[in-house]
Length: 312
Image (cartoon, rainbow, N blue to C red):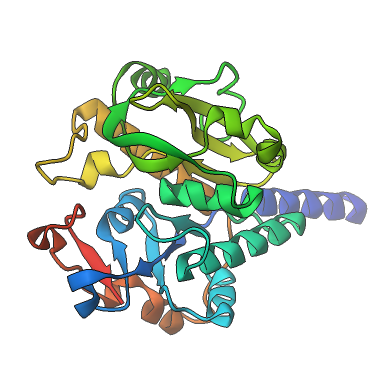
C-alpha cells in the first residue's frame, strides 16, 4: 500500500476515534443552595440527595458546587466536570449563590460550545426558572398553581425533532402522554403567553419548546425545553421524584411506568455528559472533589420534603 493511502487511512481512523469518543466516567456538577432555619446548623449550603441518586442511577458521579463557592472555584470546576445540574429548591433566582453559579456555568458552557466543547446543562423546576431568568431577564416568570400535582405531558407536535426525545422508545412517549407521571412542585413558571410575547423573545431564540401543561387554574405553562443549538435542557417538572421522593404526604407517582420515565431522563442527561471530555488534573483531585466525601442526613425526620440532604 502506498504511503499516501496509508496517510489517508490514518487520518480517517483518527477522525473516527475523535467523533466516536465517549467518556464512560462522567462527573456532573450539582449546584448547592443556602440552608435556612434549623437546617443551617448542618452547614451553609445543601443539595437534596434525590439529585445525586438521579445522576448515580444513570452511571454518573457528582461533584457538589457549594453555595458560597467563589467565581474562580466555579470556573475551575467547569473545566474538570462533564455536565452541570441546577436542582429544584426554594432559593432566589435573582440574587443568590445558586444564581451566581448558574450564570457562570451557563456563560462558560455557551462559550465552550462555540469552540467545539460539548458541555450539557440540565435545570429541574427551580433550575428551569433560573435558566429562563438568566436568558430572558426578571420578567420571565409568572405565578402558577402547580404544587404537588403529577401530570401527563402535552407534547408539541414536533417533539421528536429534539435531542431529548428523538430516540425515545414509543413506550416512553406513550407513558408521558397518557399517564400522570411528571411531578410538579412550583408556584412560578414561564407561562405560554409570556414565552411567546416580547418578554420571551430571547427564550424563543435560544430554546425549543417540547411540551406544555396547565396548572390547577387553567394557566398554560412551558414544561420541557431544550436548546436549539446548545445542549441545555430543562423541565419544570421533577424527573427524579418518581424514584426518590417518598414522603407520605406527597402525591408522586411510583408505578413501574413512572420509574421508567425517571430512568429515561437520567440516562439521557448522563448520556449527554458522556460526550464531554473534561477531566480533573489528577485522580487524587477528582477523589477529593466527589460528593462521596460527605454523608447524607436523613432530613425527612426533620420535616423536610426531601428524604435526605447533603450539607456543606
